[in-house]
Length: 500
Image (cartoon, rainbow, N blue to C red; front, side, top):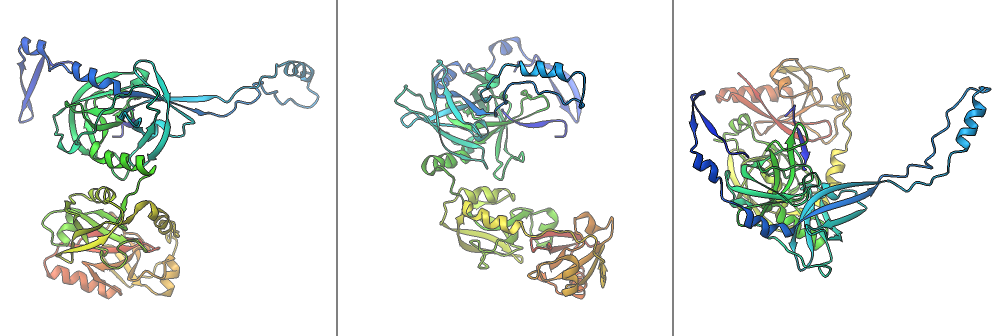
């Protein structure tokens, strides 16, 4: 999407359609005039029923003081003949004490509990606000209290005083039941135009747009623009199945590609923010990577599914060896893990302290282990400490080569090579001292200073071990070798190298 931008959000019926067969356009297929005149069923009754629960969110924040309001006097050379003139001019400026400027923004939201006065919106709508006001379609407004935010899913929960006015509320629906092609309706505050209704369909599901660790968006062509952020996406039963959050647009306006947080993800977050003012997510304590076709082939898997464990965080819930680097998690608490990104979301939705069954593949065999989840929020300092270890480059070090294969020159990992490449004492294996440009290893991102820990889940401790293991795999008819590599500070990852 180099020509487009993902923006926080913020149909005319065709006269003729063209059918394409084998990539070639055929003659236009005319649509009967009567069908065009009738159009889709009206959503007027539905919009009228729901509009009262959708609100506009306005915020203000201090933009800082502008100073005295005086134009500053320019610096003149000493003895300048203009000095007297400028002295008179600038001394006569009136003294103006300017108030701090207020920056304002507008977004959308919706009431989910009329009795308690609970309003849901996006975190980015209210982020940094000094004052939050909920505006109603009849012109009324109420100050809002912020109950809690979740930056990972971009959700915020507000509370207004329900005794000040009668409130209408809308319920959450089940986004998992929605299908591509189902009709949906958005109501919000695009460009400050309150109470705007747009209709479209679900264009796609499970979209990943790189906005956070739990990306799982509903894509819709219902028009969503700036100011729609935080507003509801309804199904045709009037249930909220998404929170409108982002758009893709080269101009900032709708081009029919909008994204909503699915209700299946939002409900648990909203409940926790209401109850605790913060999220309490489950934590497994592993680092993971995608299972590629090459990795699946190396492990003897029929399909590239699951999440591969590339490392276990020290002090985490599975640091006891229950789950190990190289394991591929295929099912968690009865839920299938198809893609790597499925695992963090499913784990996060699980209660802290819960014991769950995890199905994994280890060294070609399926195993089931039972783990007790920790709390993600408590783990973040621990994970940050690991990630913050020294990452200095050893590119300028003089390599010592004792063997070479697949574009990698390898050396024994001893005190000298540890010092040369600044490798942590707790890392063991065979050090890569040099990588040939354009080699298969270089293409997969292997670099000098990486340490080969395992090959096809067998540990190696010398360059000869590496050569012997690769020859053994070739003798088995394998075309790929799965390498576990450690960085200088011990972080693990897996790469597959072609051997043919």
